[in-house]
Length: 250
Image (cartoon, rainbow, N blue to C red):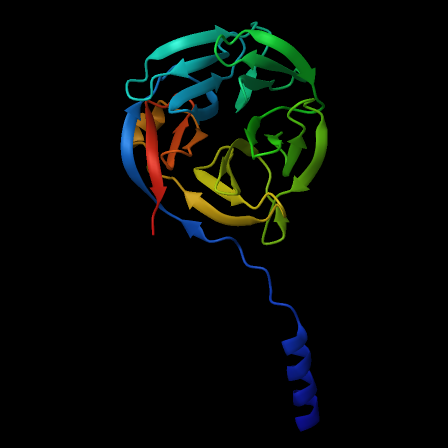
């Protein structure tokens, strides 16, 4: 009996540690800004202190430049009503924009919003962000796609997992300090993803941002923007009355 127990203890010690679900973190609201309740938010980004936003729904899809402090629209370009607009990302002096099920993306001049070119992709288009060398795309599945920023051709993919299980419904994206932050559609959670491995390293629970009365007139949480120069994170949602500057609670 002693020999058996000894063998078991050695074998158990040699086994790798079991995977653990990513820790869930809470948040603090730093500031609140007005947001257009008519905006079915798909993409959100900050560039040089300026807020850009894209929306969805056929006939109501556009790209906007918005004053952060007041929520006032400074510039807008609408999509053809046949397109359901999706996420955006800036690259150099351009803005790249997806559509949902049309398989068509647009490359716009960042100053004028004029369409400079189009590109195609398979599957659905949901959201875009970037690191210093690639554009990163979500398509509603458990995978992130990597695109060449010059050709917008796919160069690879990574599967997103938490505790070894795929995490799908990945929606709006933002690259923050080496991580990809992603809204999970129809939830109040943001997952923080290691883009090298696809592993979820943390979850941010954003429930309670809206009052019950506000939430009754709003749709899902969707929209993450990062102001890298000022180290500020902003979130909002579809038809939300507010855009929130938040920080992760310690």
